[in-house]
Image 1: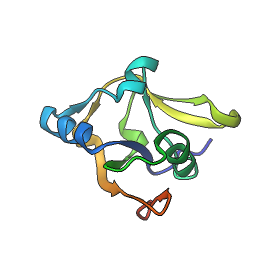
Image 2: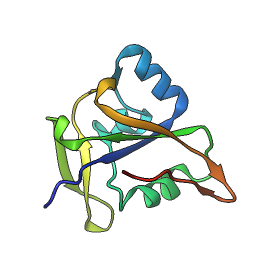
Image 3: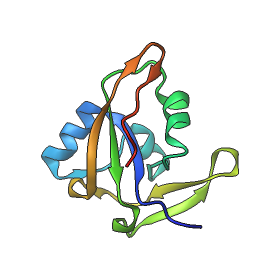
Image 4: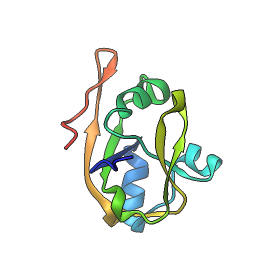
Length: 114
């Protein structure tokens, strides 16, 4: 498998603000329940948004360099695809960029994923 240059995390803006203040992101409620932080690739993130965040406003999209995450594992999930899962807290400084993920006209509007 070729590792993509960036992986993505969708979360409420308030959680990202808290992570920036704390200097670390420990996970959203679903991450804490599952025992790892869920990420998606560029090819997976739109479906992740539709399945798990439909209708939600006030979200942010984080981009992270997967090579900076030593506890990252690629595991089979939805439809047999490999998804990146982080089995550790993530330092907020690992985030390459964070951009709003607005909900408009029945869908999320994604920024350029690069």
